[in-house]
Length: 442
Image (cartoon, rainbow, N blue to C red; front, side, top):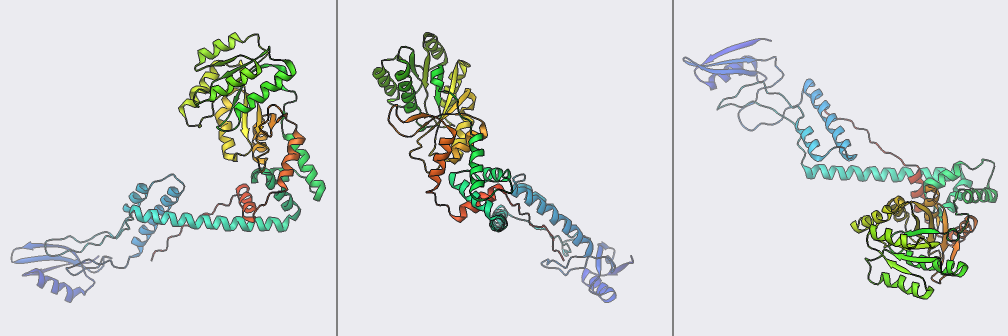
């Protein structure tokens, strides 16, 4: 690198000398006042061009600077990807972008001259949020389109299995379970034989209680979400037992002190059946009550249906846990509930030593697959099913083949849109769309 020194009476004359000697591409390295004027050091071989005084405008990036900026942009896009996946925040992205190296200044400045060039992106929170929403929307659209193509391809390649898939989904089974059942189907079976084989496999997998548990006696608590039909189920079970064995060995307990009039329902039932009824509010009281009913063959406990986030529910569950393993739980689930509601209910009450499940409101349900799939997945036996409000007529001991037959009968009236079939297929076969991250710089 050749550096030249210029002397002049003032800066204007020094700049004129540099311009005439080295041209407009010269770079000022240093300038200082000396005796008789100013001294300027200049060169023509640096990559940083000189700029006239005034507003600074970006110049074309050079090879080395382009490479630095390309690396920085790639790093920033990686942060954006992590942010879309939930592992990085907007602040992280902004910090990454602000650290992007720009063009380095090679000239010193004074009060009369500025020759600095710094270029780096700076994305605001609003801009990043808009970009993130746009990318997420595009990704969701791509996933949906690919999922639809996948379903159409599946129907074309496996028309027989596609028809069976539709029948299984009409019953109410999820995409994952449909795929699992069809994967185990023998290749040579098609049509009606394949359908019968599928239903037979479901019947085998559905656990049911072999005997009427009320005949065996014990202490049972009916637990479940709000509106599942716990109190009505208690009334049906109590009356069912009373008709078979009399009322001398029967007792009722209620823990539902949260709802207005809830205890009155059980008390009224107790008067009709002429059986003792106790109301409890804490674990110690429950233990005392159960001890007083030691000579009873069957004790049925009614619990309050509360939101799974309600602190009172945890209090109720802790009271039941204090008397374990004396009390066994019967999970009461409404077949009119959505799959997610059923899943939350199981997760909430599974700590109460569940020994069976009661499926209610079969007469109001449009499909039974959601409840059946949950019980099969959790290996929780179905003890009873109810299909009306009449006591005790509308309660029956569960039979797997009867329950599946009823589910199939209900599915005959189901009307599934093509979008529902595609959605279930996409759920079982998710498509991950990861757009390539490339930097187009220079």
